[in-house]
Length: 470
Image 1 (spheres, helix red, strand yellow):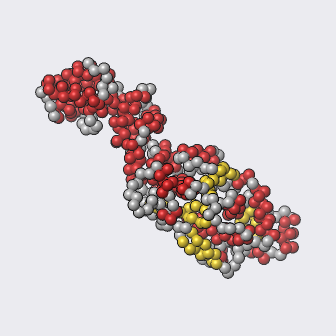
Image 2 (cartoon, helix red, strand yellow):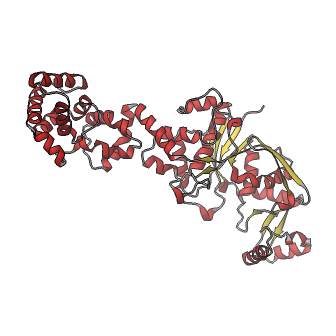
Image 3 (tube, helix red, strand yellow):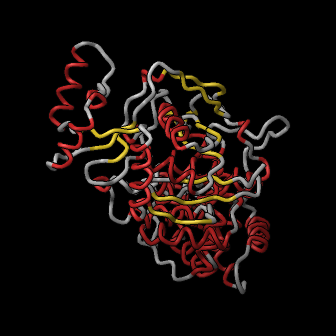
């Protein structure tokens, strides 16, 4: 087999959609697994939909997720002359033709077809224009487009790695516009030409493009080119089985990063949307390198994959619990700053994160869980005030504070023996010993073990809060 060459070809129309992230990921995994090339192409021929900064955002997102491309980015808008040259070739070979209808005429055509219950498509009227009529219109400057001359009464057959054998009657295929009146190619023409010019071997994209394949095969045949292997991955669905859309939740990749989903967790989750590693693999947590080793197209399912936010939350929490603590601290900084906490003491942030990370689903929750470690003064409920006001509680807090002052610093290892010393000296134990200490330190009745809490607070804060409670 020749070198595997795949491409990710987004349009610069805004954010990176989750579906596009998965498409890029599948292309990347397939290329890396087979020692091939992963190419980035920007399909920017529709200038009316181009969004400022979208290209930079796309490239930044690929870099963030580690989906490094080998070639590109290539821009379709920079090679209009190439598309024009190939379009002229189609005209000369009788595979395309000029059409001169106005937008109003096309709209009326569609309106009548809808009234008659017919499929809305171009009615091919311009195919009947004589050479003289076409020449006269061109010479008089009538605006035109160039359309594909679809062969009639034929059947297009092709094999898709995921969907198997597919066939479509050509009479159901529209005479697609290939070159627009502004001189820009449509997706269909540019896509086929670029894939050929770039020697793309496998076209891996969303199933919404499946119905476009016959148009593309007609073009490949007209040019006498080999058709790449087709691979159309399933749609990502909402829980109600409708296509994933913003109406039911976020669909922009960057929105999930902004909420504190780790890039590794999101990529891991997206890989398992519509693909599985096969028999014998029961894990659900995979690094990008592990995914590269395991990935194959035969394990991509043909049915839609439901975006299960609960599954993503579980996976993200797993990653947070096992993430490198120093890297996790860096990621948490903007979320802590957004909560208004002074995090100039990076050592304290690290200690706090070691305590609260087990409670986090997303990093944007850290402010809520870390607040008790940064407040200058805790607020107690009436019941908590009653507990720490009891004589036994006051004794515990006073003795513990005195013993804590004698330590150079508080660690998880030396705080537990300190509690045991207080128990031995005062005779107070169990709930009467632990509850007032916990309330005084963090204002909570339950939570992590006291040694972790004290370690996160640090000696100065521990003594201060024990005395405030006392």
